[in-house]
Image (cartoon, rainbow, N blue to C red; front, side, top):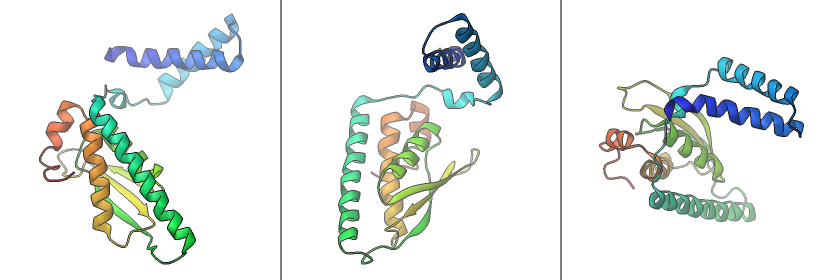
Length: 182
């Protein structure tokens, strides 16, 4: 299955090309194949990002519930801020060293942070193992007066994401770093 990922990507691109033109003709098919081949060969698709991702449905449901709960709380906090402006904001950019090596988990966490009102992932910095922090997120928080609280929230999100989407190797690698969090 691993060797089929790039050809499947090319097939999807050809399908999108034909859908954009609205009809299946030989010219559209050949044009789509040419464009897809060009994109796959020159875009520098990182094959490590195409690794299979483990999905554990029960933990994925907990992850979704946790993110939804965070969205509700963040929206309520922002609504209170709109009603009483300037009472509790303290914006800051906080460095959060992730404790997992999985690109998938880091991406899910970074995107979930950005989805939540009041926070946004400003940058993701990656390092090679054996560094303790494989990825570092820089998070802008409107309510950043307590950086440790923001980090705890991100780490909680990371634990749920790792349990939901981390491969067995990712879980084993991060086990020591996740001890006592969550």
